[in-house]
Length: 398
Image (cartoon, rainbow, N blue to C red; front, side, top):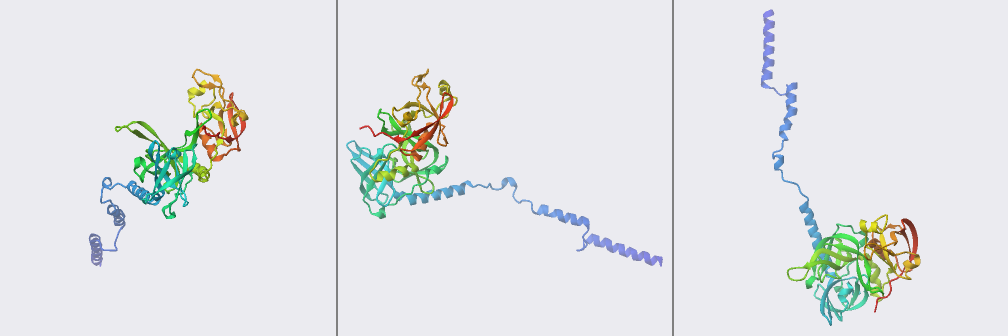
């Protein structure tokens, strides 16, 4: 009986060992389960080494999108941009302009048509018509021309809000540089609120200041004057006025420095409706002259507690600033022509003033003759508030 039991157990043990050796399905044991959990690690290993994977870039798709946007912008806007040919006793000249309504009004720079005896307007379609200058503004260098053309030939451009511009924003210039009509260049907004001399002279022979200009590095050359500066929505945000030139280049003409200036569209919105009616637009007038900005050395010489603000160097006798009690410097310093004791304007209404250009832009965009402005000045190291009733800029010298 014992011998039979022994044989029975030997058979059972043999069967178990056979099962383990053959790996019959369904007989998984704990150590085989651990191996199955580790196996996927080798199955998901990358087939291409990480360092050989192609790099991911977004630059090319963005460039393609910008390219397509610029192409579409040009095709949409360029029919509204015109070339202007002027003739006078001094010869002929070139400029640019753009259509602003279906009545035939075209905006350009005053200096484009300043001495013109005859004006031709050339459209992209090939149409050429004579134009009449109906209104001019010497302060911001603007002019409006009227043409008699079929409304189907007129493609007005819309004016954008130049106050919404940001430095670094992409802008486009279209115009007629050196007679190459329909030329498009691209750049950015380099700065806002710049000032230039006006074309209009004061009673003393000096020039008034033009304010709220946009600085751009979009290439602007002779002939671009009067053409539009546009945002990527195709809206006019400025009218190209001037370029800062360097020395003469290899062919003897002035070289472009990448610094151009455009009159802001918000100035256009204020001035152009008046010019279309053949009337004169009146700018607000303070009756003072100021340094654009001060260095630390100048501030110390003038014994000012700060170097930011608009330092008053001249007051027009009987003018608005004079009547309000503002003071110009009268005390001689070691620098010829620099006088201490003047007021430093540091605030206008609720706007902090860091330099004169900010004050000028604020006045031109927000005030008109007869309005009042509260200015905070530093006088003898103390703040004082003065109220100025603004006047009109005096008429140009004959």
